[in-house]
Amino acid sequence: MFGMNDPTQTLLQLERYVAEGRLEMSEVMATQFTEMFLAQKKRTADAQIMLVKGLRILCDVFSSRNKIKRAVASVKILHRERKKLIRMLKTGAPQLLEKMTPPAEDYRRAGKIYAQAGKKGAAMKAFATCEKLSPGHVAGAMEACQLLGYDKKLVGRLLSTVQSAGPVILYNNQFLFQPLHLPDADAQQVQAVLQAAANSGGAKAEECKNIVARITEEIGAIQRGETAANARLEAAMDLLKPQHDYYEY
Image 1 (cartoon, rainbow, N blue to C red):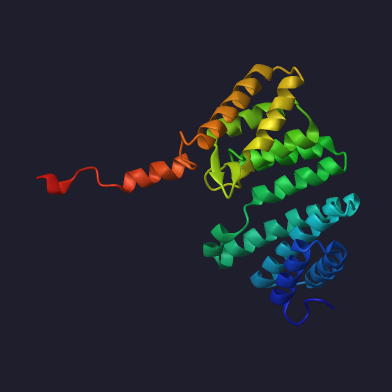
Image 2: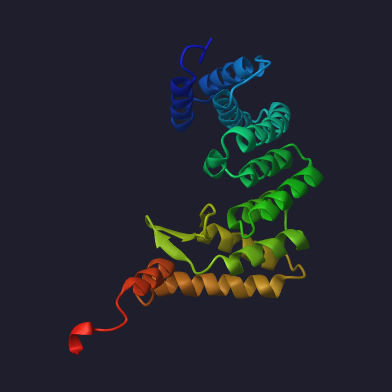
């Protein structure tokens, strides 16, 4: 069975297969990998970490392969086993808690899977929990609108996260929103979603148009060289510069 001798190497190999798009093999490996750990009545913290990582991969592979019922079942197990892991780490290794993938990312994952399954209520709840656990999560708020439509609450959440994220930046030739300590979000995708929300004529159409115009202006200013590619980084660098020229005395 995959992963019996060296789970760490198996997990690395599994991640490579996913990156290479070998999803059928990834599904087989991830299924056997997680079943191996789930069959253990007592698990160490290291084993529980491996299980949670394997379950995340399994959820994503099932989702990518459109095996939605299995994805839904797996994400429920993921939530259960992640909570067990948090309890274990709080007791035995609290210093590792900050190194964990934030729980918000699993609720974001669940939101996408529930949306695929047509479970709109469950998806709305999952995306709301993602935002509650990680306020300002632009990427999650954008995906909620993309997958569930332009519900007033969803659009309002996206507007709020964009407003709190700071200006658009240019990084690796991509225009991004980069909220602190949260995943990046493609600024042009966000712009497209907000434009579609504005076109739908909802209650927040004018706010959407205003933010669309702001994004257009910020991208244009970077392209014209009028604004730093990363205004936040530029401001931080400015703070490091001496405020006085001590040699002038």
